[in-house]
Image (cartoon, rainbow, N blue to C red):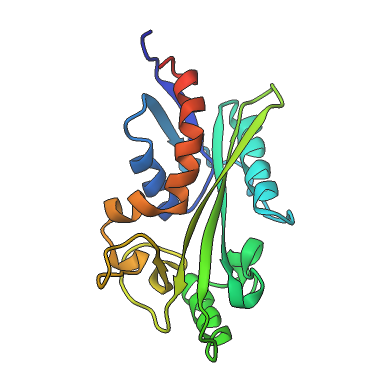
Amino acid sequence: MSSRALDLLLATGNDGKVQELRALLADLPLHLRTRSAFPDAPEVVEDRGTLEGNARKKAETLAAFADLPALADDTGLEVDALGGRPGVRTARFAGPEATGTDNRRALLAALDDEYERAAQFRTVVALAAPGDGATRCVEGVCRGHVTREERGEAGFGYDAVFVPEGQPEGRAQTFAEMRPEAKNALSHRRRALDKMRAHLERKVGR
């Protein structure tokens, strides 16, 4: 069966996520579109109470607007010592207008006296098609721990304070210290997209 290129809108305005999604989907025959190609696209308020709710809302809103299949994700950092927070409020942990720097500083302050620093990134990826009402959602989880200080210059969000499991002993790096391909091999986003891959392959005729 021959493959056919599928137009797919990446329903995110986060440049870091766009770069990761492009890399993770590079081997599939997809024509990836970004929000920048649709300057009149509505801004989606992430006001749902769950990661899945936000991912669904973004994917479905952009799919309907652009009349294209749309892929969206919502990601939360869930810290054991904080009862799973920041969770769905990960991007707004330090306030509604918080920057990544603000959020990292707020997290490190909240954990200042904590010895137990286990945490996980959880991503929910949603794929919506215009008109058919069927939205597929999958999730990926990456366990690890929060550092005591920021390390590394790469990545975005909380990458500079999160060390993922699965690295060689004695060489544990934060996501922000890793090369992009090393992060993508371990990340929560990769694990979610691996689950979505079979569905995308069926859509492109593989």
